[in-house]
Image 1 (cartoon, one colour):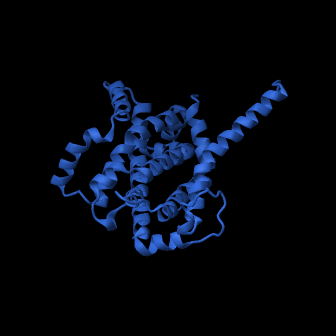
Image 2 (image 1 turned 90 degrees about the vertical axis):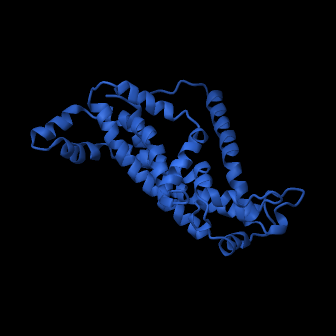
Image 3 (image 1 turned 180 degrees about the vertical axis):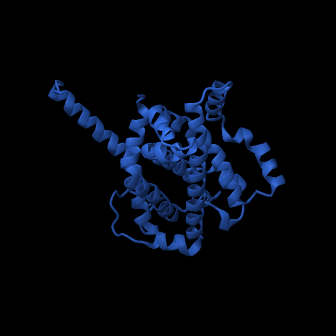
Length: 278
């Protein structure tokens, strides 16, 4: 395909992308910079965009004065468990929505969409009462359950688009060769949909990793807290611990960045697969 755009338009696009990158990356740069500044240089004026000296004291303070390792482990376990189970359940519900025609199918899809528009605080009262009766308040298992429930509607809608792109003939051929319907799904359809499944899991993992409101409300014990609640605890009525909070933010961003870096190939393939309908 021949590019017929004039050069000035190409330069304008490059300029726009450059400005966009600076605006997007500057907050990350500033967080990293603040985490590496000694405490006496963080609030100094005039502002320095490159510190006079680098220090790891904020990272040392983070691990010495708080249970940050425990928060990190809690977030990994809760997000991974909710992401895996939520994606697995959504895979089955998306399969049913894509392959079968039944009464109320449109209502189910509408219900999935509506749940994405309801703010979490509206359901907080009944949810807290229900969790209290079940003994799930201040429980990491309870947090996993509510995160699974949160991820299923969006994941089902997302995975249904991937199922719609897989021809029925693949599944029918597997069943002619002796597979059951579940066997055809597991042995034929799931391998074809691997990029879409990985992309869905990563979106679920990141959403659970960043969730703050329910974690703050349902978790009280310090050793049960997740990363977002730990970050929130650096802000008090009279002070904000900018250094340790920036160090914690850097360590919080790293796992998701590594995850996206390793899985970017599948994410792009999955999103492309879901964007077209064969």
